[in-house]
Image (cartoon, rainbow, N blue to C red; front, side):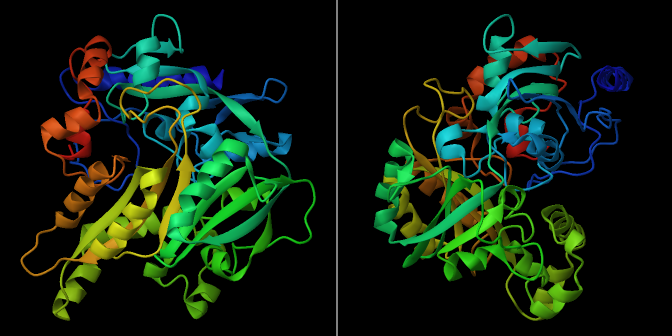
Length: 449
């Protein structure tokens, strides 16, 4: 079987890594925004673990390899009228990455986070063992601690996940609300699954400014009056302000944010109408923009040009934070006044179950809103790179929130260990990675090793 052969190559590549050397994936691409120290040692061969093993439309489950992208996973499930319970916004996020990290999308107010729909998973541990972890049984501790461990406990080779039904079309409404109206509207949707007596199956939103915010409400539909196409010259996020209602195919709805990387493609000129006409549509996608960012980080072309023009250096502020819904308006006002980046993404979420997950302890039965902001800000005279991110980290704590770890983090060790429950991680790591072959979470997230 191809999957078994791929796992065999992975395990053989582990054995080729010299004893005592750190273990990492031999993987070129990533959706992480925190750089890390390059290693000269060989990595794990995951080249054969990029596909869907099987889809069971009757049981509504799929067996999926760890490095399978959501783009390929959705392509395999949509013909059955099914999708993963949560489909993160960007096509090249992998299922394994969304589970060992975190993922979120507009179904998260009812479906939670991607790891909550995992039924079982095979993990290559830091000790080189392949174990099958489930909610109960011998490896239940690994199952519950794996989310938000970012490869510090091992790497998923196969995941069995639940699937959700989806209709051929999604009917969309963009509802403009004041900041103080957002929380009551979100709480009502979470409680009832409706808004103005219409069903709501998907909800996210955008705050363009403190005086202009929208919730985008989606519902499954078997028919469409017409469908919009935001993969060409039209730009999805602009439609939120321009169209009260809309229809998209299920496929285009799931990937509505990828074409322009939300709104970040503007930094590359891709939203200029003349540039857009000659920029091939197949290259207007998030992974292309991410590679362009990587080239800038490496060669600093734009930064050098700005310095020659006498402009200040800029700090990268790329973060997603979870804020309790009753604190949302206050946080948005603080953020706009103190950071000033616009727009920001809003995505309600709530744990599906009644238990917490050790390394990202969101409270059960509590609604949060993911606030996403991605860009750069000028470094003020006398300030240092990282100061704005540190202020955001402090504010998130003050508002009772929590921050994802896919990007830059600046916490001191004690604060980090408390926020991300590192003692619980250490206990499980001692069992599955006793020789510390896998880099620790603080080292990955903060010191960038």
